[in-house]
Length: 550
Image (cartoon, rainbow, N blue to C red):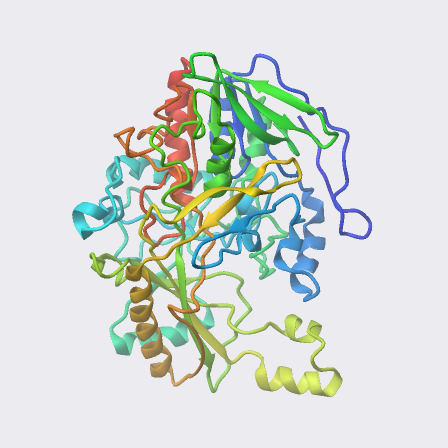
């Protein structure tokens, strides 16, 4: 089915299209969520001849509007959620943890999901990430290992279109080159390289899900530099690639179809239908032989908890009591300052160099982490000009004196799973449909916070070697999330200790699968999307087999 929603003339309101949002009869599969996990599963199952319907709570954005969205992104008047039409009422939430969690700062509700505004870095988890309890003495082991996921990682790199190089001596083993060559190191990377060489720290390229050359009928990156939160050219992968491909193969995609609950059959062993509401206020039931929940680490557990019944008073697929538990994110650590020479920041909108050198030194006391060398430290000339803080000759002087000499590093640090970090329901607050909103209770352990101190010491040593004046730092007190929602429906062999099995089928319901980072037992410190895609490809095979496919 076709159809999209764009911006109005004012560029602020989505335009409603006349779209048939009624249920699809005799559907084999209902996929809930059109982010990367749901899109990839939908495409694979449609390719195998199954009747697939995709329901997404948000709108379908018109690609023609991306230049307008880019303009929003660079104007200080708009906040980041405004770029993709964030709605505080529709997306209401609570945050009850000891650290506030700004959920809406970095989520997109719409077809394409978080890949519409992501940065596009795609690393594989390291081998020890799958065996944290065995190798590091903390956390849990995954029910699968790196070898199990390795062929799906390669397939995911082809599906997303990854530019990379085999220059990382600390990366897990590969079976083939990346689909496209890596992006060249930036000018500031060369400055960092000199300092790192003196300190014995290795740098290497960053695999990116953006085209360094034409790939999959999409152009090479043309250098807009606004990758996060919007890529106007389409060179950076987003999940609409697979959604459109699934449609070409016969899938039906229904946007603005907010699923309210899942309904099970009388024996409680199968999901019978997804109940959803459309913009006209009508309620529909989409029945299917199989249901795939792909709503992300927050909305997936929320939907299961909202689907309580007499048979499942604690929520669907929740016989373990662990739906929503073990919510994890990556913690950010960063250090930056000024250098007495040009650094040419903001010419590149994404990372081109990083270091995994210290990653596998992780143990019970120290978390795994990766170092990132920024290409976008400090304000860009556009941001300085649009800020309104100076004008005319004063602005010109500021640009001459202050632009281009910023320098900074960042890092992602693993958070261990903890039952005290969870996504629940706030029954005292409801959304636009009258349902309890998600409550993100984010709790961070000492291991991650103490690791941030170590990370910052390394970053300080590099910037000091460069001769930079350090002017800011994100430390254990000021750290925040990377907005990678993981762990709320963890996978495992034991139904008492997990929500889904190694094939991502729920232990409690024979025709319900969950895909996405919510199934991660541990977080590692790598950006999760490539692992999401690899697991989605693996789950699609299991779902196809269960439906009697190849």
